Image (cartoon, rainbow, N blue to C red; front, top):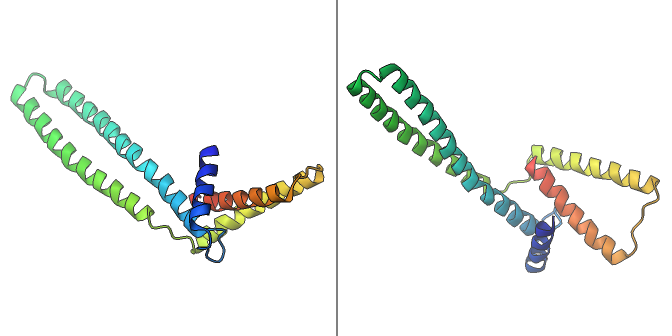
Amino acid sequence: YAVLYNEIWTFEKQYCGQELPGFVNYKTFENIIRRQIKTLEEPAIEMLHKVTEIVRAAFTSVSEKNFSEFFNLHRTTKSKLEDIRLEQEKEAETSIRLHFKMEQIIYCQDQIYRGALQKVREEEAEEEKKKTKHGTSSSSQSQDLQTSFMADIFKHLNAYCQ
């Protein structure tokens, strides 16, 4: 939370005034989402390599179990498995990277996003009603504005991630 909070205020100072209707600050929102997406790309590639290694080990084990007495057949099988693994892994990595590049195009004007944002806003309104019933109130107007701004940015982030 603290990292996102600092990041939001850095962007707010840098891009203030570039808002679009429906957003507190679109540029801030867009940059935060891009950074969040970018941080997920390498773990996805690492997961691909781990899964590929697990599958390779399983197929190699089956090959050894069935062809251990036939050296040439076992060697040929391992070679074919390795060729297929390399080809499929390269294709999968290309596909993953393509998907992450496509995710860098931030598009928030569609109906799915609007629906998710509406849901997040309704949940926030319900929580606010509960706080009001319990008599919870803030102390300063300046702090309320800052909290309101941060809450609005987080609503957009939550809606976009859905």
